[in-house]
Length: 139
Image 1 (cartoon, helix red, strand yellow):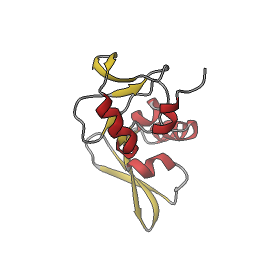
Image 2 (cartoon, rainbow, N blue to C red; image 1 turned 90 degrees about the horizontal axis):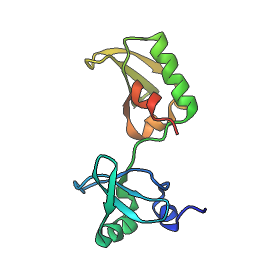
Image 3 (cartoon, one colour; image 1 turned 45 degrees about the horizontal axis):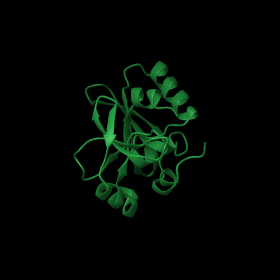
């Protein structure tokens, strides 16, 4: 079965959960049949409004989704976790070249990795993530 056309229009995958910036109602998804749904409770889905869908079609930039980490990024995060067990968070900083700052679980600076622009390309767009988010978020 092909991906529903609405998924192509919005740039999401069928069953992918996402939020809409400026909308506090909850999480949304397009199911495998192309139906626009809202999460009513823990993974229980109901129909959402046409008005909300129309707004989303006209403003797909408002879709806020979880980052899609590559397998390579996941493996690198696992390596950092082994080599630097105190490090819990990576933050992307673009000062002179590309640098990743490392922080512990109390947000104390623990060091940096320089000139690694291609090491965590997904991190460039979201700026900050925990190693556990990276490791658990592979697609």
